Image (cartoon, rainbow, N blue to C red; front, side):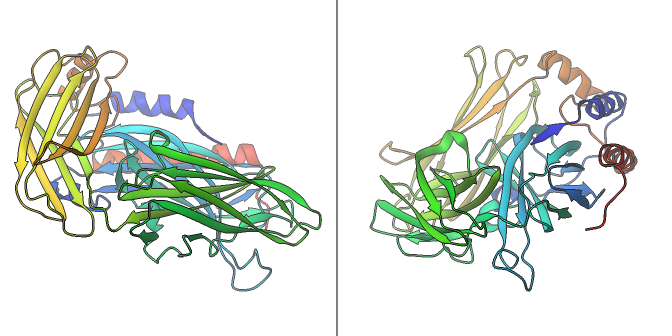
Length: 443
């Protein structure tokens, strides 16, 4: 389990309140169309690299948004992977994703940075060996901001050696997954056509000397992300694994009528978890999807604002010679702050757009940015929504602070301040770890 270190967060927040703004960072706005945004950087502060199973590991870092637009609802996703060794038992030579969670969500204004601090509780079920904590950033459960999880390309990683308390385990064989008889490609996807149903299989292995009763939880998402709001089907496989044995688990689903899905499976065996996921793509169905959708800054300026977005059209050519992109910004009180549209007249795999606007109504409220795409006949092809929230004192108070170069939700750090703050966080993390763990033990 991860938890935010509240004391450090308070110290950081107080320090940031008195800081002045950083110089603007130039960036190409068309980065909004990239598979993962090249202008968002994650720097991890490397502290202790050894931990006992059942213990806590403190992790701190800095996230920088070098884009000229704000990014809302950024989820920090951590995926913990046991690394393979060159020799040893079946489990020693296998990779195993043993934990996946989202410890926090944050907001980054244009050309700004923020620090973060979490604590990972290493499950007591982990075996001795090398592990890697991969960090990914998703926005609104829809857009890859830092790294691409289904490709296994993280925004940053943290290596750690775990001293295990057991030498027995169960795990999903990562090479065993098949969807309609096809294994995921090196790009982390399974392509399918002419079939609106799937049958997935995988194998669970055990190194225990006694039988094990376990469950495999399957989840199908209509999304490129494991977003809880995009779940379209679930299933559970109850399995019994013989001593040092192997057993299959299966899942079936119908109604695969869109172009993109994520299929995930999680083994639960007592306190031991093992994960696997893949992207599913209907190559015979072409649908646009929003790769990004942002406003230039939040709170909005009363005079001039900019809406930024990018549409991706997957795989085969289509007949979307003319389509309409609509964008609406709605306040929490129900009033329309902005509504606009543009006509897209040519097929292109990636379509970047901007809409300049002057907002109407009260700006001192939470807002939701919604985007929709219609074909020439008025049929809805894609939709997306992103929430923007004021600080507890209201957007007006937050905007006043931004006038001083400071935001409540993202400390506008200059390079010098960020470096100094990083050193302080790293020292505090090290002290907390020493006090909690005591003297280091050799593995």
